[in-house]
Length: 365
Image (cartoon, rainbow, N blue to C red; front, side, top):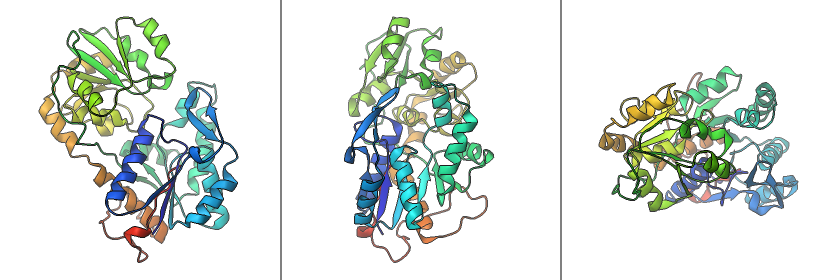
């Protein structure tokens, strides 16, 4: 069985979607599956307005159709709703092929922060796109419920993991700053709501790890905060381990993979009780959720760091990838969803259609 993942988000972008797809591909490769990623780097592209790190493929349908015809995948997963994702859905429709999609970001809310476009219009477009899929994969139960309430069909869970070899408790002296240290990690952009964090009256030091279009504005507005830019691998884990609390101010993320990475380093999370944190953070165990973000940040300082790390370590990419693979197999085989089931069980080795590991490829869009 060959799997193709089609994605408009791919390296060198630095975000949770790319990390998720990259880690999923690596996990399936270790199981013997061949993973093919169809991304913008195969096409002529232009930068996405307000998000230049994303390159949008120009007129991708003909080339993508040729590439998919050549691969002849047994399962196609469309990961994004950009030009490549739309082209892949059109290809599947014309060929009568089943496919799955995933819903990674609250796109209507992102658009709304930049353009005065009613969210209902954007949700209407997204429903038309995802309705054609056998299954739409989302990261949390709260997000699944939200989409079902908005009229989306066949929405199922595909959780996330953390790389335990990198993200684990480490020595805490990398950030030699006045404590307590409150850290944010991620894209520095309007949709991440970083102002809510940096404007808090907190003791110690506020640290921002990451980069993006709003960095210069925020550096000028909050000169007392430390902006470290992007950090990767062990260096990132050292910075997260050094923080006393991780503050996640976003109200629009569907998961927030950075929260899981911080928790795995033993750093508790402070966040709003909204989609993403509600399912990722165990209240009082791995962090504090409160409508008052300052209260959450101060409360997170009392969380047991060792327990926080142990809980997060149980979230593995192998487990998440098995869940992903199970949905693709069932969609390709035409297995019906059980009414109300959010994540049907899947046992590795049950690949359906007599497929072998060497015949499975994944395409990300």
